[in-house]
Amino acid sequence: MTTTPDAPTPVRPARRRRHARLIAALASLIGACAEAAGEVYGPVAVAPLDQEGVEVDTLSCMRVAMSGPLLLDMARSEDDARWPDEVARQQAASRRTYAARCALATAQDAVHRRGPGRGPVPLPTAGQGAMMELVSAGDEVAARWRRDPQEAAALVLELTAGGELAVDEVLDAAVDAATVTGLLTLSEARTAATSDPSMAAELCLVAVPHFSLAVALASADLD
Image 1 (cartoon, one colour):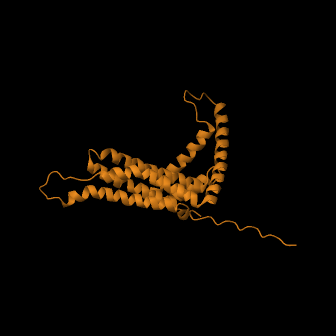
Image 2 (image 1 turned 90 degrees about the vertical axis):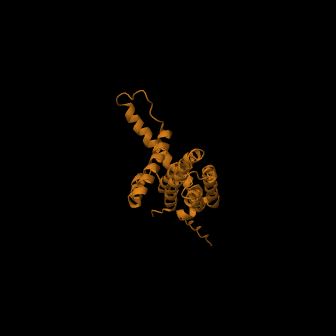
């Protein structure tokens, strides 16, 4: 009698491998932000001391603001295509944690219904509350990571201890929070480019720490 050996358990990729295309795109975006700011500050730096008006180029500020979202979306799609098994695993984990959060929200809602009046503003549905909880966790972890990564890592483990959230889920939500903040800053730079080149350049540089934070979160492995 012959037996078929069990299939080996697939080795999960490190997060920096899982998000390699996104990390590379973020790094490219950081460089583009610096280059765009340099095209504004560079001409001012070499202009004669007695020159009052200096012509600068803000086209790169506008270009990086317009191309950033598409660049990052494409990178995410490429990462997903490279790791289909990991995508499937994360989706299954997300369905479980979402269901757990919905169940908890439903139980809490039942308690509220038995309490005093709920007021004129309706509470979120269980599904809405579940999504809001994930977004809130990502925002909190991203904000804390800026101050103290070790403290933020401890917060992730605390948030996921009950099973309503998964570690990768929270870290990815934190990546999204940092990335969106950077992209919104670039959107402000694009608006400023037509009237205030110096402000546009400054905003391009302000976006850089947000993208750097996103890289750190996308690379972080807590285990």
